[in-house]
Image (cartoon, rainbow over the protein chains, first blue to last red):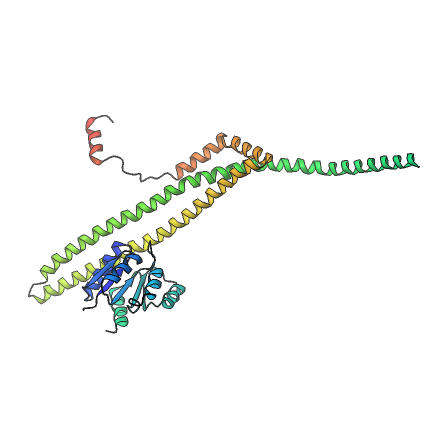
Length: 123
Length: 211
């Protein structure tokens, strides 16, 4: 599959697991960032079709990242899926209000990841 | 008339003094009670102060341990991932076999390897939980430090405060409290100490016969 995906997570282990899962379900064009700030810089220099982001991150959290992203005219159309340990209903509501298009609670399975990506990208 | 007025004034003064002594009679037992209370409360305050101090001193240590645990598990998980990826690529080369039975088995092995990879998400999840515990510990440390500073503030503000704090310090020197403090330190001692000596050094020590 050709969609270029950006994985944003402060944990190198988690980034690696997500990238492995994405490879497994057929995505090979993948970029990575360790926090929201780094992700914004990457997105301003490269074109991505989808963002998978964690919530709890240093420097700039996933919440702050999505908030900033939605204020950027050029970037706000890129769909975001939150992949996080935060599984409270209020968290999901906050994410939806921010404009997040999908929400996955860790630990995830590749099936769930594939399903959400397909939902968001309309594959 | 003037004499009578003076006499009346004297009577009034005597009445006032009687009232004063009556109040004094009531106040003295109260004050005695209050002093007894302060005397009884000092050992408790001393113990609380010592406990706060001991606990406060241990918190940075506990926080450091949490950081260590996170770093260690992160490194170990990365190593497991390295090996899983290595095995996976070795298995990939086996998958080129024309035998459908072997190819099926290879696929199953690869699936199992992927399942191990996904299971390693536990590292990130536990790490975030520990991070939360670390934040709680830091907040407690801040509160205790604040409390400790406030206790110090009482000492300089009032005479009574100075005396109470001085009494607390005297109490702190008592053996019983020192023993309790020692017991706390022993209970909370880290059994997994930082590696300060290499295995090679240990082997050399054994060989040298110095121990």
